[in-house]
Amino acid sequence: MKIIFLDEVTSTHTYLKELISSQGYSYPICITSKVQTDGIGSRGNSWVGKEGNLFFSFVMKKDELPKDLELQSASIFFSYILKLYLSSKGSNLWLKWPNDFYMGDKKIGGTITTVTKDLIYCGIGLNLVDVSDEYGKLDIKIDPKECLENYFDSLKKDLSWKDIFSLFKIEFQSSRKFTATINNEKVLLDNAILLEDGSIEINNVRVYSLR
Image 1 (tube, rainbow, N blue to C red):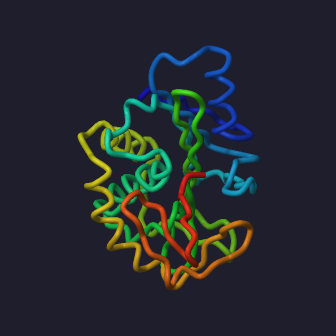
Image 2 (tube, rainbow, N blue to C red):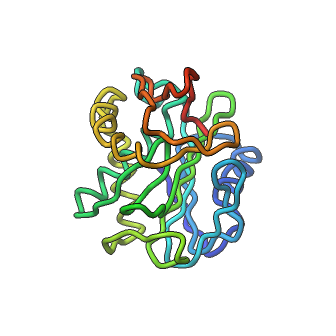
């Protein structure tokens, strides 16, 4: 994974897509920046990247993913691998379905995944410093460059969706006291059934995690 470090960008996700559009794809690339002024959050919301926080986007070919990974579960897969790395460093970070990073009961970041033809793009934002009373921050100190290098090393390992899902389905129990936005409505996850592909069944409707 080639990592490109920038001082400021409107959105790492947008910058990366424009780069690939103009130059084409030759190998996996990651864009990260000290400041992000108009990042893309879930459901089209803006996620402002304050200096000192971690935000990055990367692209890879779909056929570089584990063979048993359904594309709709990619956000969970990418997020949980980062969670595992941070846990190995002593963090109590946990992943709320489908792609939100939490410390206790406060959101501190999230993941967005999009697919274009044979490429998959993933953008991740994580608060390392205080942003507001509404959001929390990571409970350990990390070096962003070291974190990214270790994260991408983990992605190169022979991890399967089955490996990740076996861990995530245990952690999913923590999501039950929270809500998820489904069809623009906040729905409590207390009775949700987590299915093998990472989707959930709630109120007799199957909901997928890709976004």
